[in-house]
Length: 129
Image 1 (spheres, helix red, strand yellow):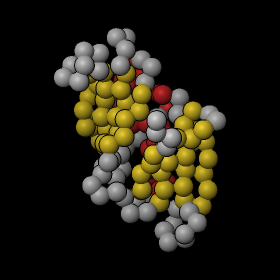
Image 2 (image 1 turned 90 degrees about the vertical axis):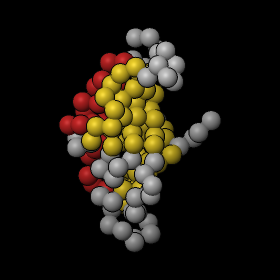
Image 3 (image 1 turned 45 degrees about the vertical axis):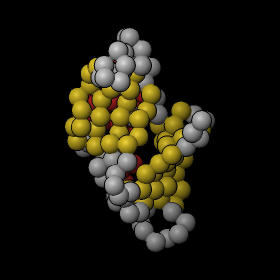
Image 4 (image 1 turned 180 degrees about the vertical axis):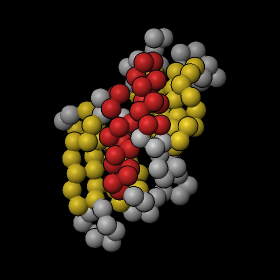
């Protein structure tokens, strides 16, 4: 079981705003934020999740290269649709409109958006509704 994961961001404030908006549909929110201790890059660290535990972290720094893929689970297809709209509205770039991906399995319903640093962010629902 994965406890937490995260990405480095070139513009911490822009990425923080993106994730606050993009993950709202799956009930993720920014739960904690603190300054970057190394002091090498202006910015900080923020943890997102469903209270009380953050499990997705962003931090200021040199973005992961190549960009990475992170998939978040949704409890409904409507959450996937809302994620896609919210993420595009927050400056994300389309990387796959909401829809079925039956090549994964018959009920695999997902949307993909590139975050401000090009990370492939997915929200997926495995249920039939």
